[in-house]
Image (cartoon, chains in turn orange, brown):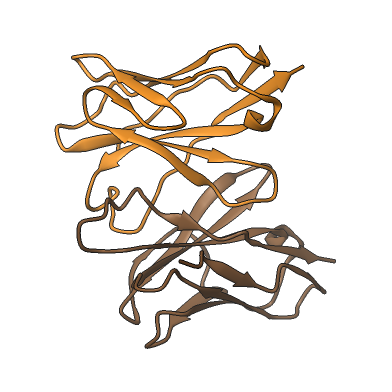
Length: 114
Length: 115
């Protein structure tokens, strides 16, 4: 599994756009990039997944450059409720690197202030 | 469609006791994975069950075990509890056909406190 590196924490204000970058230099050809969000004392929640270029859904966008060695999760106009830990995961789409095994790093703790 | 449910939500046990946690996956999901989350170690994979068979296991001692029933419901057991077993235990389920393994759906977790 490709190792990921992301900032430990980030601060933002309501209404701002937040970009969280994840580094994954050893990403393999079959690997996808996936982001999860976790609120305190809750299970992680799938946000978005992509392979290359740009993916957008109703909550976020994921930007992946051509070399795929990094990716950026973009949260438009954050609110207080977006305060959470965001995890970047990289692995094979169908097997998660080892069938049901997700490898979570430390994640990025995003704090949104009023 | 109902989400992943875990019972109980909170549990307090004493060192040396054993505990059983339960997880009901999303209807139709046959894969169930268990994770332990602590402030120090973060989220760590325990094991995964698929069609009543354990098909992957993390790096945890044999005191941690699990099983899956024919209806895909899963239980996790921890024997001879230690203080360090205090954690949030999360269960996640995923479909198989046409669903990325990364789209795992997590339950709310069981908060286990060992005193």
